[in-house]
Amino acid sequence: MATQNKPTAAFALVLIGGIFTLLGGIAVAILGGIATLFLAGIGATLGLIGIISGIIMIVAAVLMNSTDVSKVHIWSIIALIFTIIGLANGGGFIIGFILGLVGSILGLVYKG
Image: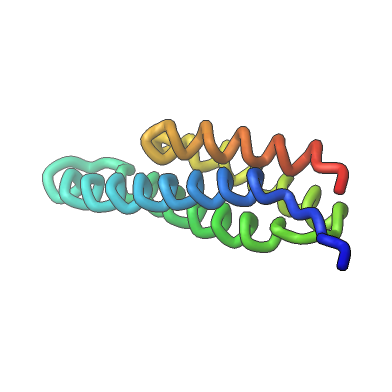
């Protein structure tokens, strides 16, 4: 029985990075929402960007965990784009950005 190779390290790094980005987005949204009560700010909007980026990174991680190389590359590019977009709200305490970046690059160089 032959084993199927999957980009497990890329999957795990993007997934954890997406979770950090999601948590960072939630934190920024809450703090931005509180600050908006007192000041006219854009913190809640940046938080929303982080939440959406984190969710899309998590979805991309799950979908790139495939044996189909073209699917891995497409979802790695999507994860990379939303990793960079998530940097707008702090990149998931910066660790989410680093993990998402490294995981996306691992997915892009995946050969099968």
